[in-house]
Image 1 (cartoon, helix red, strand yellow):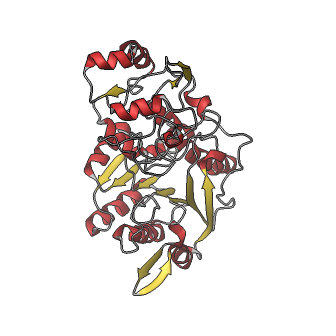
Image 2 (cartoon, one colour; image 1 turned 60 degrees about the horizontal axis):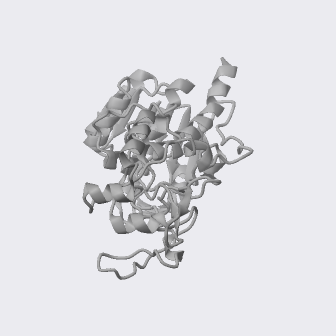
Image 3 (cartoon, one colour; image 1 turned 90 degrees about the vertical axis):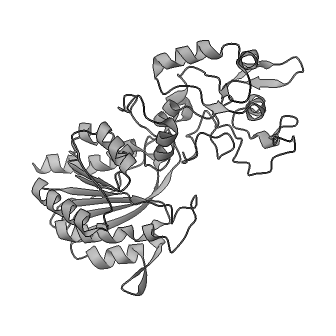
Length: 380
């Protein structure tokens, strides 16, 4: 397989064990390409802009020499996504063009293209003509490929996270079995299923001295030590005191904006205004909300650990545990990444968090690839 816009390889985490050899990858941003190469040392990485002739030609030549059967392309979506600027003039919207060109040149058996739900209807200008992405792909490739357009939610495929994506599957017309999305699972995998067994941890509070931290969380260090035994990435996120106190008094599945007393406040003590998807604890009995790039903040969307009831304080106010965003290890589990995914010990956690927030859950990818892998085995 050739992986285009490979990032750090989140989507590829299970492909090798499933029977797909990712032999070549391309990523534009050096920092991401370097981390990809650390995680997948057996994959040749070409770092550079796919629109540059030299880089494009290098990918083509090496793909031909390696006998590429599959292309997976996950072009950047910031110009399209509702979480981005939704700029029709964003040049990244045109990155589907070199992908289609490469498919026409290499003629792989299968092609997997993934993006945000709006991707297929995004308007682009090609040869001074306006066309949407789906029309462009059909016009360029329907003679050589069967094309399947799909809008999916990963929560229906054993992933403990609601994440809607557009998935385009192409099968070369000389292949007997068409590549299709597999059937839905019988039940959702919940947050309780994947992180309910992990040790509780308290957040580190950045704007207080250690003495006050331990007054608020007397077990801070012992809990952090226990969590580190599970994973070096299950470590306390850092927050500010007023947000932590607010979330300590916010029940599972609720937003602090609905609290009677402990509402979100600014530095000067005035109330924060915002959407009720922020300062919100997740629910144990459902898949998590979509993991975004900004997943380390209490004040961002649906990021706070569900927590568990501890007690009522001396004033009768309820207290809940884990007044914090999910740890990186919890994020990895919600994204269906393996516990032993080989992140280097010195990698910047904020960087990894933001990158994971761009990715597609690898367990879903594996389930889609299992369809053609089974077909290839049966054919052999």
